[in-house]
Amino acid sequence: MTKDKRYAFSVKVETAFVPDQSDVEQNRYVFTYTVHIENTGNVAAQLISRHWIITDATGKTQEVRGLGVIGQQPLLQPGERFQYTSGTMLNTPVGEMRGFYHITAEDGTQFDSEIAPFQLNMPRVLH
Image 1 (cartoon, one colour):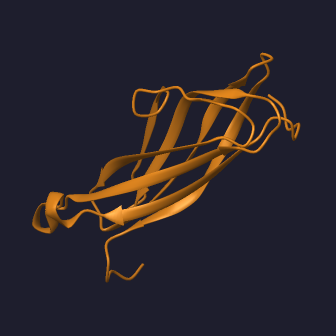
Image 2 (cartoon, helix red, strand yellow):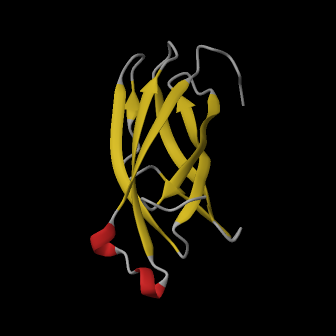
């Protein structure tokens, strides 16, 4: 793995609560998250896999690993962007997600791009 600035992705996330798919009485809280990825390095690189750590308000954690995102392994040229939307379900109205993408540059260099922790919150819930 490398910390060389030639190999860098920027990741930003927006979240939303999905009330029509949630059921508060059954402790089912559904959220979507839209991820904005940009190749901020100067070498083309491909997102190979993802690793998510999802934690609810009780501290229960689940890990999700898999190839690509939404069935794709985008190859991004320097400055190129990719966006996708996915979702998750929690048993509490508040939670957190974080993780990383494993990426391989065009020259074979492998690196991870951190996904900083972000909150999943049902509106009007204190946390």
